[in-house]
Image (cartoon, rainbow, N blue to C red; front, top):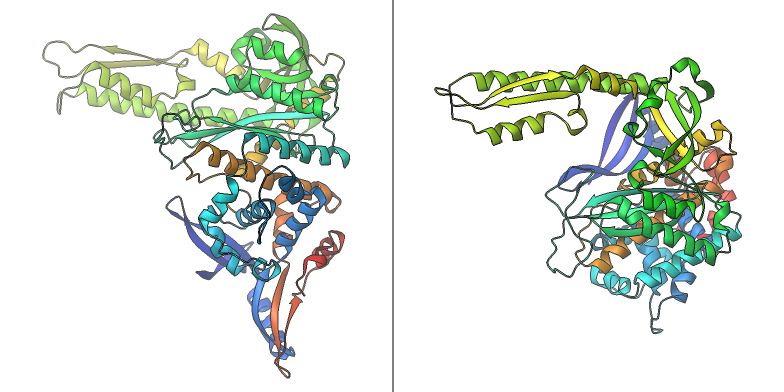
Length: 553
């Protein structure tokens, strides 16, 4: 159901038409169209009354057409059909089905089950000649033509097209994330669905993990879906092999490439594997070089200002990690320091408050008796894992006449000082010894872009991975694959239109507001399709991407 809502921005009222639906059991906005101020709406109504036609129906067109444009640029449908063995029958090809799934998900469709309803209400319904019923089972049947080898071949060919267009990577950013699922592991032979550490704190759900490697322009090059109970560092080794194989197939020398990755992937074997094939920039935990945190800030040199105008400083040295000496840079960001300091003080205050409350309850002999283990469990829940070196405690067994153990706690000042010395700092290490300090730091910090990719993969208005309802491994892998391809479409579109200076979300917003309408002439009653009014930026995008070629006749 569509409703109109008002938003107050700088004391001005702006109106939006929004459509809501339940996502993971909670009401969420799944589409939003900007209408303007009240005066704008009144003016539009007056203009409509003076027009020579009556609008019968309006459709979002710009984003849909832009995705069709990217499909043509990359040859996605042809690549899929090249690698799938489907008999020639009347109807859509496998590639067209998969494209339909990608476009549907990019318009807020959260499952294959909703594609049919979305299709009937979208501009696609009269742009695409579709002879069959678009059911969930119909789409799942097409997904069955895609297996792990097919996905790799499709991914390889898409990367080959990207390289031909000048998008050869000189840096690859690697990161991992996970998504909980609503699927139960019915079959013990299923590989992917397992419980593990979940970023949404849903320990009760099975989850899947996804590793992603993106290039300098933030475009996905390689991905891997792996079991939910496998640690990132275990998966990292296999991902490196996959990256090396793909670079070899693309005739890209791996020795010229720099890999950037999170400290969670560190191990002696992984570092040795990376350095034997390519260069890298990574980070280590503070406790791996605590003596470097003692270096006074007066020894740091100013490097550059971040995008949020914070000054970045660095101290360069050599240090041994995992049995090898590397160029090491300790960075300091004053903005991050202040944020981490505030967060620490706030969490410390909450921990102490909760421990004091538990202490009072234990000192009272009223209520039920408590065992030592139950108190230990409650204390562990109160003291967050990363503060256990700072907040120390002791549980004293109950003596005669007491029903509960007693609790003592204190702050370890030495460890607290160590903790505070790490605020705002990051320990980077690399084998690019010839690089300038500023380049080392900027290259590592650019990995924030891949973290933005995972945010997009969590956005149900763009290319969502969640919610995952599939319980078969092969369907889960295809589901994730299509979300990654959707992300690739958007990132390619952003690269192609970077001259406009739009952020990803602003670009999508501008395209989404390009609409077409079916209208009826008041005099002749004839119907035609027209484009609604665009602003100058939208008109420029429309022309630059040649979106008019997809308009139905």
